[in-house]
Image (cartoon, rainbow, N blue to C red):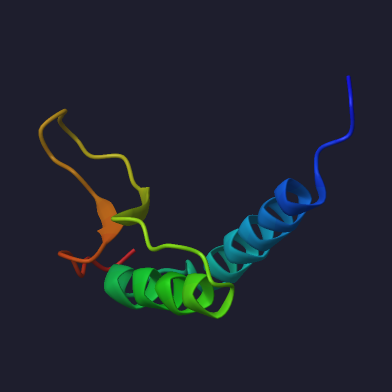
Length: 76
């Protein structure tokens, strides 16, 4: 297996930084929208394109979604 190209390593490092930013914010009572918006700001700083959500929780039914994204503001 060859080493990844430098740009792939840079993208990976940036995404890992985003992961730790988000993990530090996830606490009881945290705003899912604030978490998502912090994620978007970090992506923008890193010149990476935005995505529609950053994570999800587990609901009681299959139809109940808990998305950390633009259109929700559920307390974590």
